[in-house]
Image (cartoon, rainbow, N blue to C red):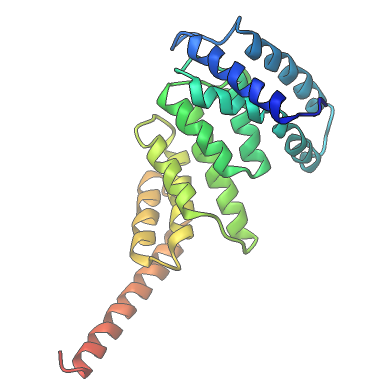
Length: 232
């Protein structure tokens, strides 16, 4: 790994920004020197990842590799005009895998705005992958008794709302959103879960809908009772 210095990092960001700004929107970054260098690195890193069987170790390796792409990504996001960039969108996927959700969202916002696509090996749309990967990460965390940032899921919903994807994927995202806000905003959570059920009746939220409905009803009755006691 090349040791990065502030000057080297600055040069990498500026070079990437200039190359991205010069690339034609709707075309590819192919031919731009910074892109070709990073593409070659990506190919080598993908070969290294392919040689690792453990999913946990793959994630660990991605965490080690990702900082080496950070300056290039920052430059493209700063100066890019929307040319197709396989390095950029692959780094987005790796960031999701590595748990860098804020970093992934920064790329996703740019990629979705400009209509970038994933490399062929992913075999699905960028919007669908972002929605499902974030939903899966959130639901996995909830299953383990953890939490997940509701604002990140809401951002994914906003970014992908007008994108075409399978109903099952969007239902999973709404399920995750419902779970993420159920403690702080049960009515909103209930709305998300009902949307999820309307898109996929096998999404697994019927009991949660019943539970939240009863909770909201009971809370409403308690509020009415307290208001009556106060004489209002």
